[in-house]
Length: 432
Image (cartoon, rainbow, N blue to C red; front, side, top):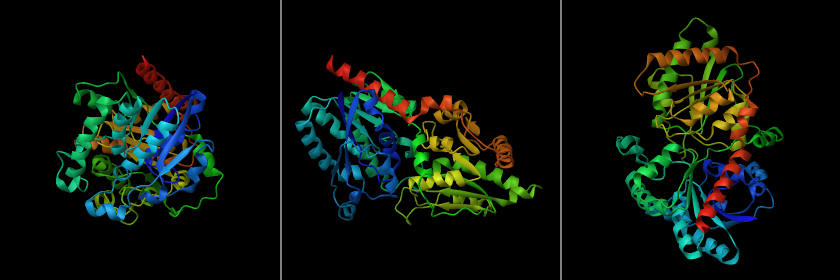
């Protein structure tokens, strides 16, 4: 049995999007020839968007998990240092050194969007003669905001961008393997760096876990957000952002069009956008509701705070219609799409035609999928959204399901097998 050391600063009970790849994979790695151990940050040192203790129940009890401290954020923030990857960098190095000296590992696997810790890969590669793989779930050096006005850029953009640019350039060319959720990220690395050590960047989307819905159904979860039963609740749970404004505006135009029609059914529409910010509770800036207000819509509620993971699943099952807006960024893959599929509810998704989400939804036969190629205002797109919403709302009480055979290739177990196969290939190349 081969052994992989996994680096994941976020881990249950922390409810962060970037730890789900590992959470879903841990029950299956051993089936494909790999024993796993995890290094993560103690929950009390993570400035968390939300905590969900039920997440812990999905981790096999026999997986060793090693916890490290991090610098106190109330002290480091004075110097503009808040990222958990930066605050725990040296603690990860110390614990990694300890484990790699004491035990025989065949591979180090970084799966996180706290990218700074990935820079430990070349260090361990050199010191312990061990290969490392990085899992790129979002852009590390993100050029998306370079041509955007300052008002649309994240705080301290240039400081973070400079550090990310330097560390990415140090790490990626030395990696023995790269796994990515998007082919566009692989293409970017190939164009950006002339010399890459790895032979293949492997595109592996997140997997979907049916087990998560079983945990939810067997738990007495009472969501903190109560949907009005007298309304037709259209629900989206996930991040917001200015890169979604194109889709959101066209969606709202369709809502307004329906509301002004002759059918009183559509006057009961209530739109919910939940967990749209990565900021701490109560500190998030709304990016969706202001767009609705500018368009004269009052039936849109945005709650920026993130909510516990299993409350998310409960709300999805409670909604009348689910909505997933895509980004204008063609590389945006929305790994959260699998819970939307598994929820078995009426679903409307609007994505860039190049996004992998379009193919996934079409293959699994879920809901209505609308794609766009241009980001110019389009009355035709509004009409298409309007007609889709009509159909979904009118048939909302019907039983919706997905193609289970088609979904199998997107399951957590299948995606873990693909990761394990890639581990084997990288290890064989490293030893040859």
